[in-house]
Image 1 (tube, protein in one colour):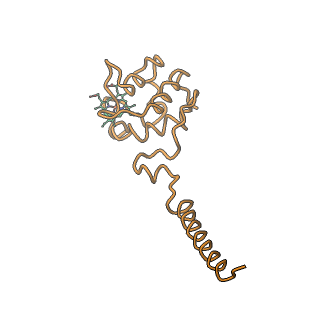
Image 2 (image 1 turned 135 degrees about the vertical axis):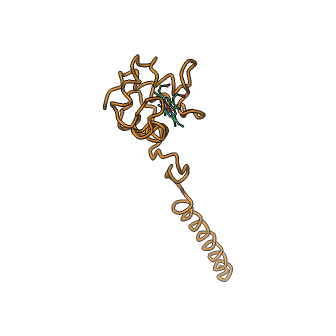
Image 3 (image 1 turned 60 degrees about the horizontal axis):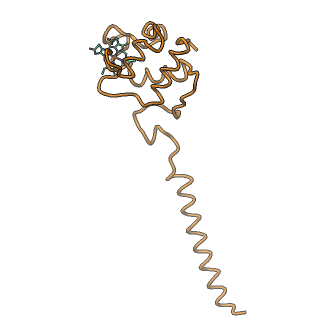
Length: 140
Ligand code: HEC
């Protein structure tokens, strides 16, 4: 057996291994981002959207309203007379369920003021609002 040669090979393999380990370390730690708030700063939603059939007010609806509506619909700034900062402020706009102002405005349906103005929520968020209204907009 040619000892010097296999030694050289061993060193080469060690180098390759080290290189792979360095890349993996990078991928699995500092280079890898699994936090939505780091990838999309400002969007404010820290959990991936879940278009669950039975959305909950506190888990699904309130965060959407907090992030996309409250700027113009808080107690100090209730545009259009709509203070959406609490469940009891949101609930009246859900009258008529899936034909409600909340669904019409967020889905940008004809005959409603599109909300938020100039921007539409993503399809998963729209589905959550719709399904929540379909369930009778419970305070869950
Ligand atoms: C940039 C400010 C702004 C944002 C953000 C905003 N709204 Fe509005 N909203 C308004 C204004 C202004 C009105 C008054 C009607 C108009 O002039 O369009 C209004 C009116 C309303 C009304 C009263 C009914 C009506 O159509 O007049 C509801 C309900 C409403 N908005 C819901 C929402 C919801 C839900 C969101 C978030 C998904 C939202 N708004 C985000 C500005 C905003």
